[in-house]
Image (cartoon, rainbow, N blue to C red; front, top):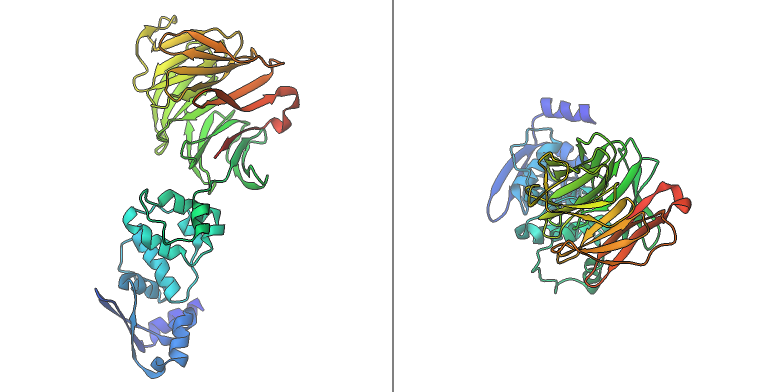
Length: 412
């Protein structure tokens, strides 16, 4: 078909003029009926069954003349004059393909970013798809819908679906993979491959749009939660990366490693912004404060350190004597510290340790406030999150019964 089309284009005069018009513009195209009829059901019916059958000129009213022109020229293998490939143009092309009875590829809409001005056009485009039952398309709607958007014109089913979020689980394994699960049904949604070493932990960004994974291959990888696309690979650590955490604005990642350092990265560009030496051995856990001004780390040698996230150099000098400066150092655990977290008001820190305890600390006074109930064995690992009044453990594993060496976290 391709060779025949090219022969027709090169050797046979055009026999139809297509006039594309709307209230703003008019564009004329010279083409061949046989080519348009072969590739467009719309033109096949028009030239064989419509009143235009014997006409040499056809007027067609379209919503966007440039998109319609580019679509027709693409089947004629002619040069496309338009250089606009912005979101609005893509959406107009979807409308145009639907108008001419051509199939659209819904996957092109999954990762689209739509301005508030173009959101109505976006909703008009997706109306041809079963978006209520398409999780990826519903995610695109949720991601792009303006805050003050009027939902009164939509069905109750759509509004309910829009306000409901699935529970997801991400797990990292000794088989070097990451798996995404539906927590309610247990369905495996996706498997992500790229790491070349055991995946030590995974974490979701606060907006749940990205996943960060860290591995014994010394790298951190950033993934799109819903598409599973690998967005970036961060390299620079010289030993296992034990922990990663996002900033609350989703723009930075902090990582802790067995190379005794913590690193701060730009999530979007992957640029390394800062490296801070821990001075206390392997870094097992890290976290940003909710205002993104401080970083806390838990170390292999039982101490907790608090850094200024912007400068890395505030008030007290560490005992290493190499000039590195810290906000604070907290002692009290008798085992390695595998988890740390800030309270929502950033005034307290929780730490979980292999000494079978979770401790609460006051940041301003550096005082130890409380110890949560001890566990039965020192082989439990913790990862917890503060709510207003308490700390809730969302991850723990009893090492002798840990299945497949997997670690996982929930998001809502």
